[in-house]
Length: 300
Image 1 (cartoon, rainbow, N blue to C red):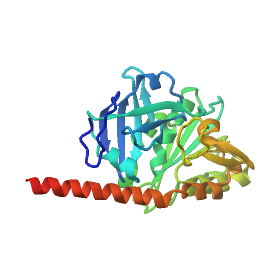
Image 2 (image 1 turned 45 degrees about the horizontal axis):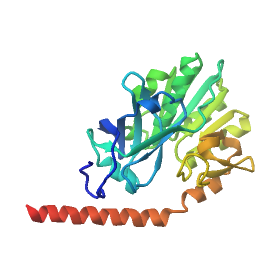
Image 3 (image 1 turned 90 degrees about the vertical axis):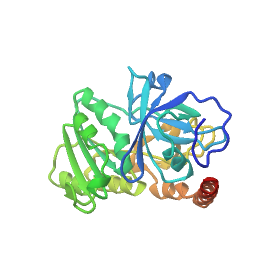
């Protein structure tokens, strides 16, 4: 049973132990989780859906890596809402109630391409296995990764290991190019550097900016969408997005889509649908944690 403040009493059987946990930057945590059955099917670009306890929220997380020999998957989780904050309190030795997957259509990888991947902040973890898949078949891989500052940049070494070229941008100029990942891509396009395919994963505003930038140049551009998601099978309809004026489901038709065809305004609006409820849920959880801490302090 997880000994974490705010966790409800958990009657479930836990079969997904956390083997390692590392605290990184900007409330980002790296987890290595035992999940041998998922490893057998995992492919670049796919994701899993996890649940911490019996009545817990189901959240989708992109596979950042996996190890066939150990039977483990690697996930990067940013603590921004109730469930991810709860997960950030867990440690090696704790277990997750469910890890289901892999879900989604694997990334299309074709030989003879110069592949440019842009990862913004937390999105760097998601581009890692896709860049690796291109590198394995012999494609030239260029990774553009960015963060607000050098201290908040994650996975630089991992990206260098799978890329022919890594270019870095920071908002404050503390490392690499001062600016955004789009600053570097814009320079590449203006210089007519060879680019066959661009992939962008990160905040919606970043993916939209990349798509707007490449469209006039006619460069194929893919984005990995992250709408509200529940069952991962297309049955609930929560993850619907509009691409090329056609309704699609990110969990079964994606998560990668042609960035030039995505209705980003609708995606942004749908992501905010449950913001008030999410805020209330987090506030209740924080009060429970505070009350529990006060009781423990009084007991001492």
